[in-house]
Length: 141
Image 1 (cartoon, rainbow, N blue to C red):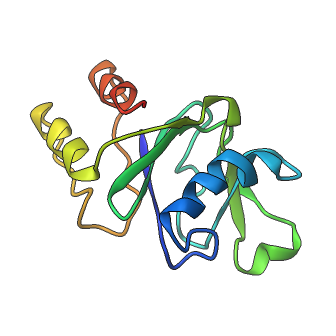
Image 2 (cartoon, rainbow, N blue to C red):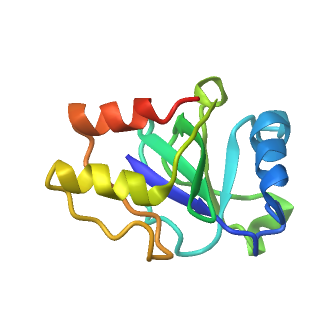
């Protein structure tokens, strides 16, 4: 499971409403549906895999969950200077979600998985286990 933190510094996410617009319309409407652009250094070449579960958050609020439908790929579009990579989100798996990162961090700690999720800028990777999958599924609205 990967936790992706969306930033209000990103042009696509100036406010909470823009996050819903992005997942409901923009991501689905791209030339390649589900193309989630990545800045340099955000995820290593083998850092995300097809089928991986994802939690998306905005300012610690969990907004959506989904699954990746590809690994990291090189972006050859005009915006490649700012976003040299991307991965595909399986748009058929995007679901609105509820909760906060601190609750996920706490639930993981109960499983013995100690991760600094709330206070890091990184996009933490959590090993997929049946119990972690239960946490992910519990976030669905």
